[in-house]
Image (cartoon, rainbow, N blue to C red):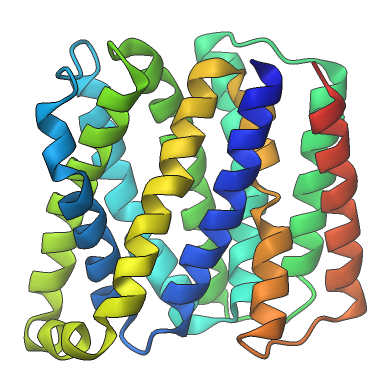
Length: 276
């Protein structure tokens, strides 16, 4: 199961990087986020009639939806104020340390020395990439808040998907609540601008909506199979894919510091994959 969880979380990390690159490339990021979440909810809506209700997990779902709302808002703000190769690593670098600490301290999940070393290597790598570029204080704060939210919903959803009768039940209802609720909220927030964006950018939104289901659906399946600290850190290898996408497609620059950070992430990933 550990091998399966590792494969799922790595696929999740790749899909996550692509979704965030699509979001970053949009001029109206809030409208594009509304499209992404809205499409994911519409795609999974029929599945609500095929899976059991997430009994015993409603409290986790509600808590996750609240944290996800704050996360998406902070993510959008950080992307508006800085490069993806800066904001994304800072947010993802803070998250695994906080998620591991929360899972161990609050829910008493096991953690080994090797996992700690792997987490630290990945965290140092992504932070090295992040600090390789000067950024405004407000952008830094938004990125750090994003990381805090990532850690929070990771721990919450890891518990929620285990409490639900099936993993698919929790996954489907997660996207229905997030996509239906947050997608609608962002669309209303943007008003007429949302419809203008939707008319011209619905295809990227649809693609990212499908990938969103893959990225977080696979992550939740993995969390049901394995320990949160290790998997939460391993998912942050998404920055490897995110950096490559940002350099090749978004034309962002890769400095020596950022390259050093990529190597540290790769080393941490190797350690976590090797851990059983």
